[in-house]
Image (cartoon, rainbow, N blue to C red; front, side, top):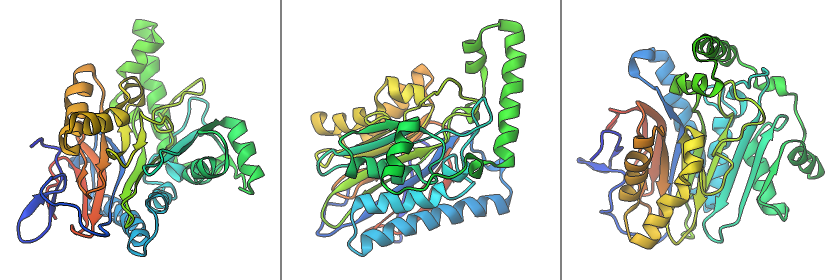
Length: 348
């Protein structure tokens, strides 16, 4: 088992959350969430900071699980969990969105229904408080899958969604991160004069950050959703994998549901979310095996950093990542809640 495998105590013995050992039962419910992957090391956390992250992950997990427990849909559970994370400045989504090169914020999100592969996505929106809600609205009330920028916001207004000022996403720590990223790139370009090379020289922390959820409801349907503020210092309307169906988000009852987090360009190029589900559906692999293959064997050799959360209709969950940490949590009607941040978080 990889160092990043998540273990969840089911009874007196710790059992892998991505184990195939338990079979489907009537009305099983399950949910997994993530708050981004990257250079997340315990040495960088005070006890107070760690407690804040764990508390918010727990709040989001329980919000989603409560929806499922009351008979709600996996789509509603995913939306509820992501709303909690979007409304927190701790994560790179919604209130905690990173800054673009021009010191503004551009947000992306997508959601997908495993029952019928309906999907909705928005990209580059600047005045939407909860992008995942707009992605859901695109799926439910438009004839399209993805809307972007001003057009997405015009659609939002036509559906009664209030536009908010972009400054609602301003945070001091994200602005400091932008200034550091610009300084690092400026220094790098003094030597290479190559913007692309300077960008690649940036630390992973400036290129990642996302929130997401996957869920299984009592009807046996799975869903996935992802929301992000994108990449620090991004320019030219850059869009990552989070709103791209098949890259950052995918769900199909015939295979699995996936929400991704990481360096989006790689997740787009390697069609990560859909690739994992295809390995499950067409090669008969477990979600644990498929996820580990893509995250560790496909992405790692080419420099792709990040992770995914995966769920199937049997209630199996897998949360592999190839970075130093990933904010993550999971719970099911057969497994108690598990909150983890660092690579060596095994059981609590």
